[in-house]
Amino acid sequence: MKTLYAFTRRNVKLFFRDKGMFFTSLITPLILLVLFFTFLGNVYRDTFLSFVPPGVRVPDTLIDGFVGGWLLSSLLAVCCVTVAFCSNMQMVQDKVSGAEADLAVTPVKRSTLAVGYYLSAALTTLLICGVALCVGFLYLWNAGWYLSLSDVLLTVLDVFLLVMFGTALSSVINGFLSTQGQISAVSSIVSSAYGFICGAYMPLSQFGTGLRTVISFLPGTYGTALIHNRLMRGVFETLESDYLPAESVGLLREAFDGRLTLLGTEVTQPMMYLILCGCTALLLAACVLLHIRRGRTGKG
Image 1 (spheres, rainbow, N blue to C red):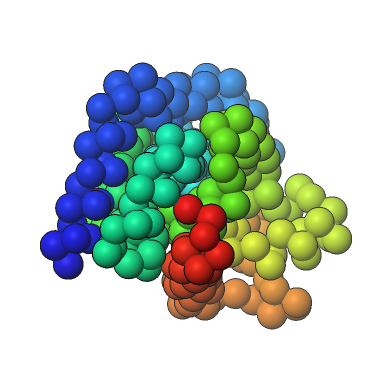
Image 2: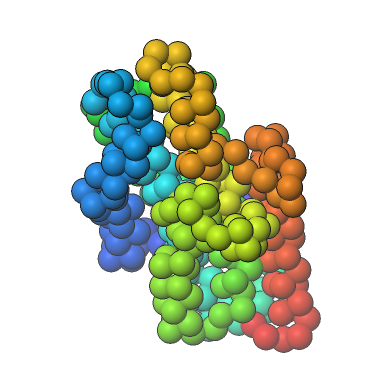
């Protein structure tokens, strides 16, 4: 355990020592938060109003709570995975610098190195996503707060689990990379594409049936759905109890991924947690096995 702690601490210190990398990773979610609310806010506001029957007036705070909840949950769903790829660059940098080869001749187990890379990347990603989450909560508090204490706590749990999944995914993918150019290319691809294939930028209801079926097999989709449901539950309940008929709210839920199916079967929240946790465990096990295999074949 002392070796694991020392190696994890070493990776965290190296990440924070690179001020440019840390600042970029920290500021990116905040920039995206501003861009989301600036350019996409009116789009989702108009979509929301299209479900409101003529003659019904919904308070601006409720509309802002809906738009803010959707956009904040989308941002968190993306950042928990994309930031993990930046935080996990140390694994590739050690290959480039030759540090991994030096570590390979020490008595440290390959499995310890794998877990150390994972833990250090997870810690830094949690810090950055935690800052984004706090800023997002402050925005919702001013715009339209419809969250209960349980919603807040469960959102924190969902962010934690999605960070664990994103870090495990990046650990497996980065295990196959060996140059700085490769990690930059992969990070760019993930940053630009992940938001679409996990249902963050656009609701899955906007995709065709075939693409929706494919996306339903991706575990990140359910992490996104969990955060969406958590941050928008209070808005939907307030709408149904005070302003809109249940049918209208049901259609609005369907349009914004309030109900997901896998092979025709509705995926409940416990099932979403099981899928997300199970895939995280499998990816972490695969990461450890990759490091052990690299050690046996002499590649580092």
